[in-house]
Image (cartoon, rainbow, N blue to C red; front, side, top):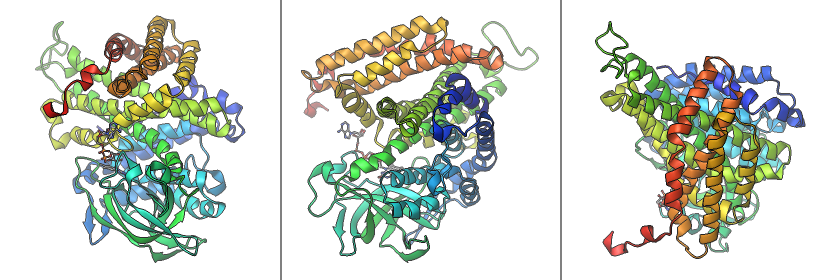
Length: 577
Ligand SMILES: Cc1cc2nc3c(=O)[nH]c(=O)nc-3n(C[C@H](O)[C@H](O)[C@H](O)COP(=O)(O)OP(=O)(O)OC[C@H]3O[C@@H](n4cnc5c(N)ncnc54)[C@H](O)[C@@H]3O)c2cc1C
């Protein structure tokens, strides 16, 4: 099945559900984006993702990347598609117009990103890291740094990479070894070894700009002593011309379960020249600008995987003939009925569809909060986007992976072999749950920093917002019950977390799932309210009803498992593991 970007759903979300035009009318920076312009961007992104990017997906996986003497070669089919992506300005879509970006709203960019992720996850990784690096430089760079790096990154002539992880320091970056020694000329000498660096070295761009975390010699211990540096592959002059090769190199690339077209390097920094980005010892906070962007984007990666998997499985279930419908033959002329007649196959497809369509609405909603925070200086939107970022990263990637596995199941044995491509989606989707902060760490962030720290205040305000929205009355009661449940569970956690120190960690993943399901219930009730009286609307209503009947009740079980003590998790002594 050829990937088809969900154009109609994208327009429905932008203009019918979230009414972007009304919001943008009050924001000077976004007023110029008319419905026609947005529709044209969506249509062109749909064309590129389907016709240019998607055809490189399977060949890129088969070819993989190659390391030779420090040089890294990406699949040859990637070159042209990446050039088209960059020359079309897709990496600068939401970038700062002062430096060559197009200043488009994140709401829209979220939808476009999904298309690119779905079409080819490995290829788009080179893009997303570039977008993330430019965001970080835009937020923390000096005027000279912005003028030098941003135009090159927006145009994709140079790409970005994010160098945090070391062999012994993954989740716990505070214990990293990489060092930065200040030089007389104001630069720093970077020495150390980073691992797992996506797009750290490759052959798709003229220069590769690492944003690297390292510690100054006199830095305070732990995560308060980390600084952030721009460490380019070639040292550029202020006019952007490339000078000497910098002192770092790829030591090897990893052989991975999936995203095989994405080059993951060990990077050895041997006295490489680095330029401080932001303030000394404030590097982790600055890096979070990039990481928060990447977290939402990786969430959307999960969504893209879920969507392409669904499209493949739905297409297959209509064609493949096996067995007969329980109510009598539906394809009496044929040897058997299509898979789609079987309720269990429908359960799998509808689960994927319900999670994908709510997930898409969720990504657009988070994008909208980022726009409001950035362009309308709305402090509540900033708090809300911070609350929702870990949920977007983890819930979207968990459901994207589960959707891919469900699609594989719909294919039966044919889902396990290479030819149909769905096993690649499973392999590619899995990493979303692991990198960019594991989903376990996202759940701890939601629980600790975002919920318990303010006594559940931000979460409570978001619940009020959801409760006051206009939703379809068919689902109002179920939504109210779900919101009450979330409030009840949050209050339980706020009340018990102090006395039972292991409780938050013991139930954080369940809590994130409960929060995610509740948000999806709200989004489904909003989508039904906005759904038109046509086939598209009928599909929304039917999928919503599946969500409320078959998926939302999982939240009842989650409440039971969360509102407990940590005893069951902590009782087994180490020696018995
Ligand atoms: C293909 C790939 C690409 C990557 N790309 C990049 C990149 O571009 N740049 C970069 O810097 N890194 C990158 N990474 C690294 C990635 O972000 C880390 O692997 C990830 O953050 C987890 O770190 P770790 O592997 O050291 O696992 P660990 O930190 O050892 O964690 C192992 C397990 O323990 C859990 N855990 C750890 N600490 C805690 C805690 N305090 N509380 C509860 N649970 C905990 C984790 O959730 C996890 O399940 C990449 C990794 C891969 C595999």
